[in-house]
Length: 137
Image (tube, rainbow, N blue to C red):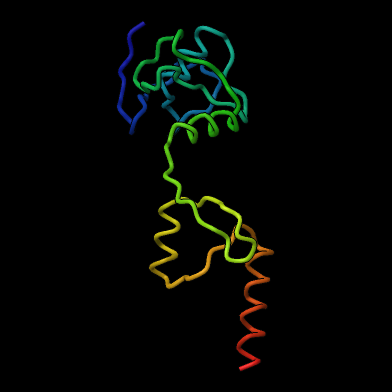
């Protein structure tokens, strides 16, 4: 079967066949990988699941490259791929070493933050200590 493919961001769209049972965008388009999945399995992707491209090439819509996984697993899978730089800090209150995303740490420094804490309770204790010290002066 031949069909016209339209690029839509990183994915490919195509005109939906008359008998396609799934969601249609603008009433007439579907993603090519959803069509390939439907043709080969005879069912559409259920709510809460996504069709994942195993080799990460979103234009490679061969059935062998597609798998169905939960939305939660898909999000987790792609978030692990992104390397997030970490900065290691020492908690002002308990002196425990903890990490923060570097971009967040840099923003906090720009905003004038002087103290860093591993958790909310350490932050509150430090604030209480500083209040007591300022009242004693």
